[in-house]
Length: 124
Image 1: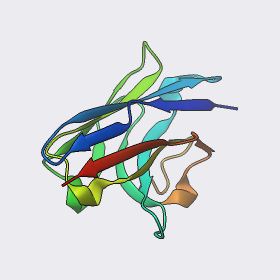
Image 2: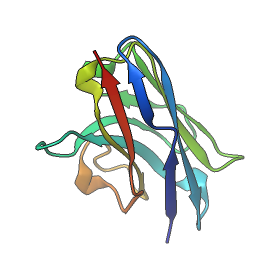
Image 3: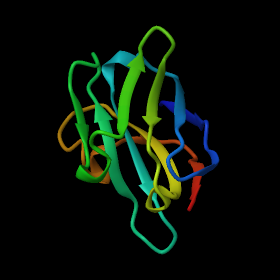
């Protein structure tokens, strides 16, 4: 069992930056691929970014490439999502997720554990 707790969300203006954190506990953190997903009101939960257990490989959805950076600190059991140049369309609840196997890291079904989410609101 893995427990995930997100933090760092908030209300910002367009063009601002935020850094989300996700603290993990329960199992060997470096064994898990980690991902960030987001869900806007009335929409499906969608993939944002993912990172391999070692941190050597990262993946991004096209809409955030060049603006968002996923990283991890295995010594702190934490994964981060640095979000720059935020846009109103980035407004959503952001969820952290952990995958024991890297079968489908861009799909919700590929993840075994989920956090409770943190709200990010970007005003225009």
